[in-house]
Structures are given as structure tokens and as C-alpha cells.
Length: 84
Image 1: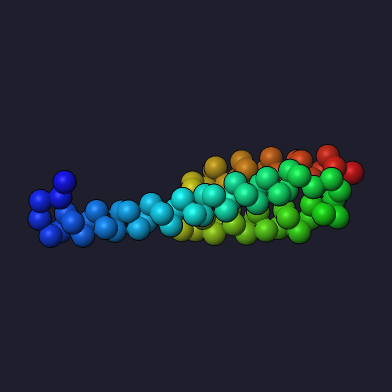
Image 2 (image 1 turned 180 degrees about the horizontal axis):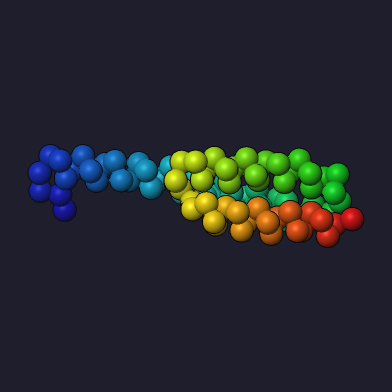
């Protein structure tokens, strides 16, 4: 339990950040699932760009690391390439 005002404020801030970050990570997972559910390249292309946008945004905001985003983007692109 926080004992002084600055600790209480830190707790509030960290809880708010945690919720915000969870929302972003959840969005990335959802967009990935939508992409993997597509069955043609025509459907997958817009889903891929949405996923890229979400990953880039999360990386810019330091929610996920750059290499993690790059790895996920590479896997997603490989999936779209195999759809033919």
C-alpha cells in the first residue's frame, strides 16, 4: 500500500498506463486474428496495413519493442504472401 501522496499518485499513474497498454496489445492481437482469418490476398491487404499501423504506433509509444514489432510484421507478411 502506498504510504504517502507521491506513492499514491504513482500507483494511479501506473494503473492508468497499464490499462492503456493492455488495450493497445489487445488491439494488436485482434488485428492479427482478423488477418489470419482472411482467405484471399484481396481481403488480407487492408488487414495487413491495419496491423502494421497498430504495431508501428505501439512501437512509437514504447508499448512493444521494435524487434517484436518487426518479427510480427514479418510473420504477417509471410502469411499474406502464402495466400495466393
